[in-house]
Image 1 (spheres, rainbow, N blue to C red):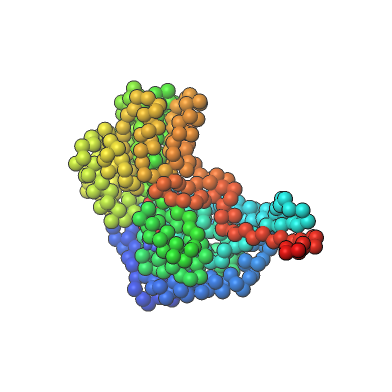
Image 2 (cartoon, helix red, strand yellow):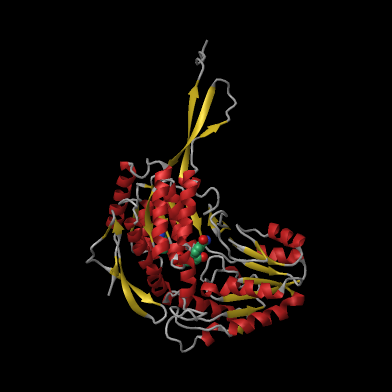
Length: 486
Ligand code: NAD
């Protein structure tokens, strides 16, 4: 059985130490092992990444030269992405159709940020003091620690790695212990494509052990984290001790606000994709359906009809529509939240624990609850599973108040054919992203990120590369310095 081990200084590390079982969620049995690194290995990776940074071949290279290497990495990904698919499906159980979709486009994130790097140049600053000029230069931080979750390991890594490398940093990645394989395979591919040794290192193992050791390491200059709000808080606390800037992409409890004048076919598809793609294991999952009372029965019936008929099965089968949850602990959490919603009085219209009964592996089917109130756990906490909480409203003011009654603020959706109302409600929803008559798109030109418990900082967008750079102003005097104490 294969063991996925750290990738440091351009090499896969030989391993005879402790390992973590990686369980295939479709069958519930171990398919590979992951090296359980100690803080000593984290230190080795950090020292090596720091050496690669200081040695200068990457950080001091012309941005265009770095961009050329990122383009070669993109070429390799475009040619070889299929090699990475199976390990990610076996690790996290995501449907092969979704993984293939993400991986076929992986190269484009690297190409986009390679091009952004080519545009970097010192900027003259319009100072108002006569006789002096100032020029702003962009400096990479040094070693960036990138910590990723299990739901979309390589896509989320691309959002961090492409701009961080384009900016001239070196990066140490800590993938989730639940889905490590594709990141180790990717690092090897990137090195073969020309990424110099030490510019990208991967440390495998547990978050509270090596993840925290990396964040606390004295050579860490910036941290970018995607994961739960619990993990995010731990990372932010540890990073604060070293005064290390941090970007946190955390969870969500996003609202889909549906008005009676919506295009119903479009809305049904948007709500279904919002909550049931990836079996609800997406940060932007539209998990709270806030629907105008007059259209609720029609909309909910349409959603139930589609959800009941989705095909549950093997994630490796392209015909599968409902794949397993990623791991046994997560299955227990989602099941417990469904039971808690019933206990608190929400009305279960479709119970995915029943439709998944008898299924081998970690399956829960689409689940829909009605009459969910803001006091209930199902309204307030992220399930990160296929569970839709429904409630109704009568006025636009009620709709936005319900949408904003959340500790999270990652995304939201508005469904209406009234453009002015759509714009009004989108402006009123308190979150980092709102989609009108549309849901869950991402693009390198558009920043993503949350407010409140959904985190801080943004990924992607026009400032993504600059987020991995520090500005430095160099002033030049062109006149005699006056005597300060005449
Ligand atoms: P998690 O917080 O358990 O783990 C995420 C990563 O952090 C893993 O690599 C883990 O090993 C590491 N980690 C955990 N504790 C740590 C610590 N104390 N110090 C350092 N590293 C630590 O999250 P998960 O269960 O892997 O992912 C699911 C969560 O991620 C959900 O809440 C989801 O909403 C969120 N998510 C957010 C986005 C976004 O863009 N906002 C995208 C995907 C997932």
